[in-house]
Image 1 (tube, helix red, strand yellow):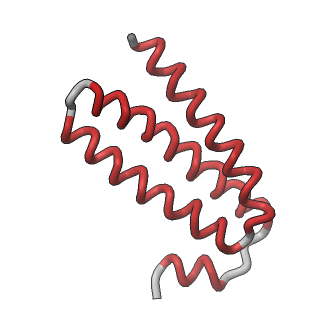
Image 2: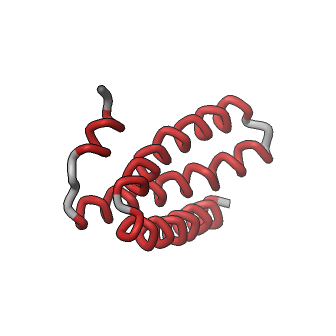
Image 3: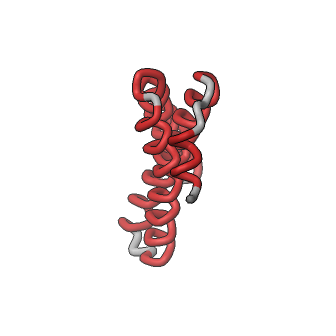
Length: 95
């Protein structure tokens, strides 16, 4: 009886679903961009840790998506856009 069971069996309000969906995908996208950068610079350990973190954070988005897809999908799309944009801006400014 873990977190997945709890989130799937407790009805979350729409605003909570939207916040979790947006945040989880946004953070996951930021970590994804960083992983690609680390992998391209052969920073193997950083890339592996980032990939693990990305999967862990992504599970929260998946759990919410399975519970209420009509609310979660638009916010996950917005989170993907925002996360990628932020990560590329951070990467561009640090280069």
